Image: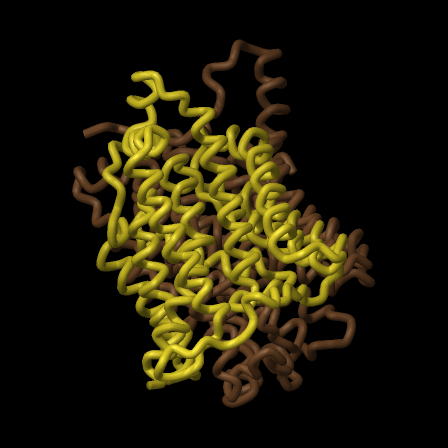
Length: 287
Length: 352
């Protein structure tokens, strides 16, 4: 049953992509900012957790601290770097966030060296589980479970709570929602911080699948953007579908036709984006 | 470099307002090129550096066509630069080490690559288009990494020694020939692109950047014009890549990286977009800073590039060349009240 294994591996990989990219879809969909620094926030989280684990913290505590830390950094960045960008065009936005990414990479490598960072799996998640047809790594099942749980949580939060309703309203029409009394500025800061926290969380739990190397923020940025673009800006359900489809496609290509994998993957992305330029499930936008 | 105030033409003015080439302006336009020659004479020890400046100018000028005039935000321009570099390398290794043929071959390959990818992706716009330029660059970088037999993968390519240029000028160790070669190629492309930007085609592309909807309404074939401009830009970038391959004798996978794309964006924006000599200023500043920071490792170097990118957005949104405007405005306002300042804001959006 190798095909089922590949499917599970792809699913686990897709979940990591989803966890990291879902924050990006909100920032790009809600704030209309070309956020090329999302990978940088993920990288900060991964590096922080790795440094904390190396200095003796237990995995869960390190992960929590890293996620909270990145959320705070994200909030500060939203207030200082991103807010002036909202009124500017796509070019200044991409230059600024691109530059920020470079600065983050330079800072992290200066502080922690240019080698690969390791983030070992906690002992509780290490090992194999018997699935009936074969033994499968517990860690990957954990990733799938976390991704599904997050998806469910977001569904409830976005579709079922007042904050979620405000968020959806602001994505659809920021000016109108401001006019009816939504504090869009505060909403922006909070969702941006949450998006960065999710990026950090994804980088921490997904460190086995997306290794933490010094070029992390750039290497996987294209991947995250692709998930968001294919899924549709501002729609986390679209990102979920896109992340899983792309995760499964890339993983199965890597197993079955390794030499062609990148070509197939990027050709699929090109085809999907050309077929549906606004993504598979675009948010209804009033812009 | 006061020359560019003359020809900045930030938005398409009526043709009647196009500046005439008076003798005074000819002198101003000669200044940057005289500086290129002066650098050759005065700084013989820095010719390799100078060659890098010239190549960077050409690369930034190519982005100027796509981004500055056609308004295509390309985050993956390294793709064309890298394709040109690899094409020149492969040509030198497998076909001929005649430099001009290699240059033409690389330019043609990059142009075709630009036209094909442009034809595919230019149906989209905005963020989708930016992501597609990134995806194309990522695809070609992966391809170069995988096709080990042709590109050397991670190791890159080493070019064999090139034949003398035109059969006359040997490529020497000190880079005399390479410098003049790069300068001549830059001059040719510069004049060509100057001509094209001021042609009806160039005006039309400029109009498309400002308002595609209106251009379509008056019957301009928007998509075809954009693809043509993108192909032209790709050809120029390919030439720049080929020059760098021939001048350094090697091609690396880094030529296709996002850092390269970011660098050329930074050079162009720092110098000033839609300024005739913006790319010149940006490239000189960039290479001088790079030289000053030469002892830094690549990661510290990213700090410099990133900082410059952010600074260019925060402080010089119109590039260093806008200093020329400020000086010029100060001078005219002393003589007479200003008619109207150069407006470089985004084109007004027209709601349907």
